[in-house]
Image 1 (cartoon, helix red, strand yellow):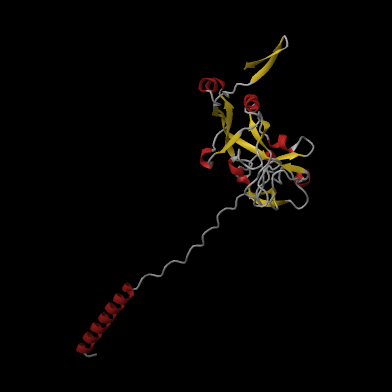
Image 2: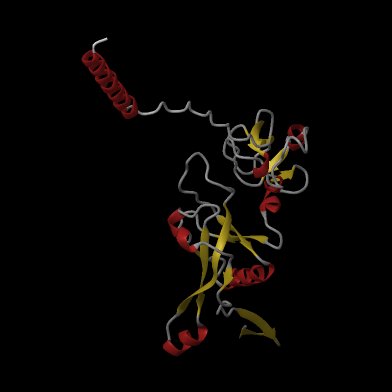
Length: 269
C-alpha cells in the first residue's frame, strides 16, 4: 500500500476517534430510574362514637343520633367512647341527656352525658361544689343589659341599697350601688338554658346563676336588702375567664320592726 495513503488513513482514524470522544463525553449520563418512595406507615385506627347530628344541651340521645367514626388510636382520650373498649356503647348511651351541646361529628364524651333518672337537668350541668340560685329580674331587660344576656354569659351582680346614715345626714334618700359578685356564669334566663333557633335576645322573670355556697348566702341577703331586685352587668368575652369572684359584702341595712310594750320600734341591722 502507498505509504502516503496509510498516513492519511491513520490521520483520518485518529480524527474520527477524537470527534467521537468529544461528542460522547459532552452528553449527560443517563439518570438512574426513580426510586419508588415507600408509603408512610399506617397508624393504628380505632372507632369512636360521634354525634350524627347537632345535639342541643339538655336533649335525650335517641335513635339515629350516634354513629361510629374512624379515629387514630393515639388521639383517643379517656373520656371518648371507643368501639374497641365498648362495642355496645351505642345502646348504652341511648337515653342519656346531654350536659352541653354537641356539633355534628363531634366525639361523644362520658363527662358531657348524664343518665336519665339520676337527677334534674339543672343539677346535671352544675359542676361539683356549685349551686344554682335564681334571682328576680324584670322582663323588659332593665336589670339585665337590655335583655341581651344569654345563658352561659358572664355577668357582674350589682345591688342597689339605701344608705340610711347618708339619707339621715342629707335629709334625702341616698341609694348606693355595690358590685357584690363578678364574673358569675348565667345558667338560665327564665326557663331558657341556651340560645334557641338563632334567637339573640332572651328575657325572663328570673336569672339562674352558678355560685358557691358562700356566694349563695351573700346573694340571698343582697336580694332581700335590695327589695328583691338585683342588676346584672354583662361582661366582655375577653374578660370572662376564670371563676366567679366575691367583690364585697353588700352594704345594705334592712330594718326589723320590734314591738315593745305595744310600741313599734324600727331596728337597723
